[in-house]
Amino acid sequence: MGIQHLVHAAIALACALACERFGPLGSASPAWLLVGLLVPPLLAQAARRRFLRGRHRLGGALMEVLRHSSVLIYGLGIHACDWIELSTRIGGGELIADGTWPQLGLALALLPWVALEFVSVEAQVRARAATREHVRALRAYELRMRAMALAPLVLLYGALLLVGLNETWRVRIGQVGLLGALHAAAVVGIVLLTAPLVLRYTMDVRALPQGALRTALEHVGARARFRCLGLYAWNTEGRMANAAILGLTPRTRAVVFTDALLEQLSLAELCAVYAHEIGHAARNHLLALAGLTIVMLVGGGWLIEACLPPEEWWSLLGLLPVLGAWFAAVGWLSRRFELEADLHAFDVLDDPRALVSALQRVSGMHAEDRDSWRHFSSARRIQFLIDVARETSIGAALGRRLRAWRVAIFAATTILLTVRAAGYARSWREDQAWADLRLGEFERAAARGAASPDGSLEALLALAAELPADPAAREPQRLLERAEADYARGAYAKGRAWLELSAWRGG
Image (tube, rainbow, N blue to C red; front, side):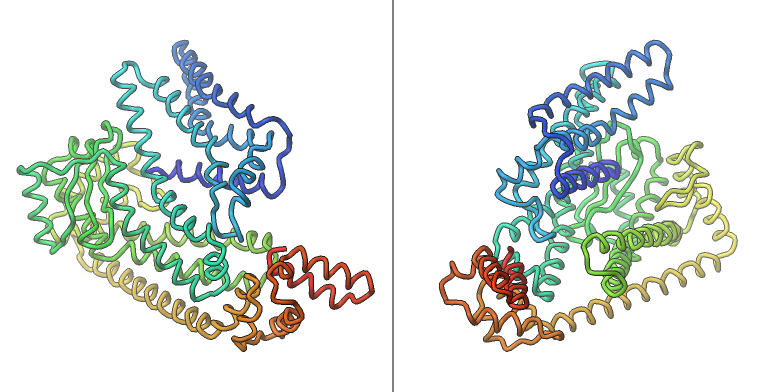
């Protein structure tokens, strides 16, 4: 749900950061970006004409271009003009400070992409809808899907912006490993706890009314000893047949069923789907995938630090195979988690027929034999349930293997985070001293009595002791002037030291 919109957001962000780093290819006025707003309606009109003339393949290709037009036009447009430079000037600095903290200028830099998304949605719905009522319904659905996909990113941006706007917090959290880890954990926790609430408000949902369906679902929940905040019907204008659990804890999680699913399935089939969703929560699938992500990304980060040069581009290059391995591992485990959730539905209901029937109806004949990143094909899942019904040891074997995987993932996550936290605790004073240097608080840095393995911290502290207490003398530009003076008289070693201290101060 909304993966395409997340990909578009990631591409737009990458384009903005690349333009900031390398500069635009052209020097046109940012006003030319307004011309890009005309492209989606023209594409929609061209596609509609091709369809009316019976040239459906070409019309479909144009509609596909229209779906991706917002990020394509944005990427080309910002590289042809100085919009990113204007955004950084208005925002008061970099798009992302210190490589981590988004600034106000980032929202301004992405504003044309957001505008193009709105124009693209309008063009798509007018090309696809035949009546005004259909246009309104389709527009609302498309905007809600984008809001659902982007709401967690907006939450993350706001949480990071609160720190990023304060230089002291930004430097302390960015430089002191333990503070950074605690902040990351707090941000992830806030996003996970609040995202379900935000998603429910971005969806067009309503509580399932009292009746036979709700009574049956509540009976399934009671039998599975499952508690949640509520059961909801999600209006997708009949375009999606799906169900999902939002949230991690009984007080925050909600279960939603789309309108198409409620219309297509019988009461028994809906109970089977509900039991399947309960299986994901009962077996802690989301937590296991989160643990796998931590192990692979944090462990991969260590490998990158140990095996590659410290330059930024080497780190980004090393990140590619790490992300590829994470993608493959999450897909492999997710597909088997789906089978385990099917088994849970089998255990709760003691009858696989309803779930088999639901899989056949929802997937349809065209999707029945295709595996996806996170799901086996419905044909494979159905055959697995049939095999388990004939021989229960097959399901028991899968359950044992996945239970072992979860134990291993949780153990590895605990060990990795403990080792990482211990390392951060050991380097607490040194990290704080480096942060003091970055902030120009040289006396506080010296008072910590910290030492670095290579002696670089002590050398810079000794150099900083030569400076007067006047804050103006500690500004990066004044330190650069001292470096120039030492270079001019041949004191190259000391001049380089002043350059290093200026770099720590942001010069």
